[in-house]
Length: 458
Ligand SMILES: Cc1ncc(COP(=O)(O)O)c(C=O)c1O
Image (cartoon, rainbow, N blue to C red; front, side, top):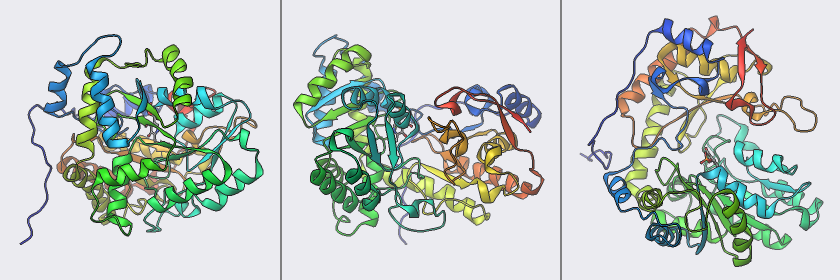
């Protein structure tokens, strides 16, 4: 008999999981303006809002905190981070930042100006926010197949080279500060980008003289999928694959709260010394001196250690295996989930789940609210609410996708928790015909509205 694989860690400390009654949850979500970001964590039973910064650090990471060097300049922790970064990504120039969006702010301050275009696969919401905040335009060139929920295409995170070339052809070079590829493609459902696609994008970048950056929050999960799904990579290690992915880029940003399994931290990294120098000035203004930039020494140590742990094959097998486990349970119950399963989350197709709620009434958010009421699960809507308004016309942007994302924190929940989650979703699925009331907006912010929006029932 083949022995089953298992989590490559055991538990040393535990944290309470909270229970509540349905009546309490109904009251809490109403008081939260039907916005799950407004809930207190004690009101949540299983928190699948995000996989960002919610992972469990290892004993090695915790012990590295004690060795944190808090010197303002030249701390040993900075050099630990530099060593890990150089070994894993190949970049020698980097700037620590307190999280991913801060790294984006630093990079885009140095690169992006009003009227520019930043093409790529679907940009993450903070990335889009930083581009639009500068009155520049993010252009989504993701492959069309990404919007087909059922397609088993192995690389639905890819950029469509024809769409990308069209943008590169139609606009002068000085209007395109960079192409930005997000690995894995969070907005398209945690779907990976193939090595062939990265290679081809590099060729296009060279042909048109444009830089290529990677948003590499989940680079290790992307490398895992390349190993499993792309010809020629089966025998390569995750770190070898990651190095090749990074070799096609002029630089990267990373929210290290994902694949470096830390609760806070990030960085931008550069191949070109001049751009690094330019970005350094912004890092100093916004984040802090270039050898700590928004991070304490102890956090840099934990990040360095996390980069090694996050790229271990046994860990990735168990991590991505757990996401797959939840998706399989849900599929057994007939729940429409995005195929193939992404790296960090299970995405439910809210449009088919709740066909009686039209897009303008936020079916994704309605479903997310119902999952909370049913079993205290906190998820997030990835649909019209998150897609926000067109910055020029202010009309709602309908991407055609209405999803609910169940993001799985790293090394936190057991498969029993996943069984509970699947059962909660099943119960809501069984009463879906009775869910007919949509939501409407009572108040919204001018940008990134989903974080703070206040909603009410129709
Ligand atoms: C792909 C991607 N890029 C950037 C970010 C922003 O990172 P942070 O939350 O650390 O600011 C996120 C966060 O979820 C993300 O998923």
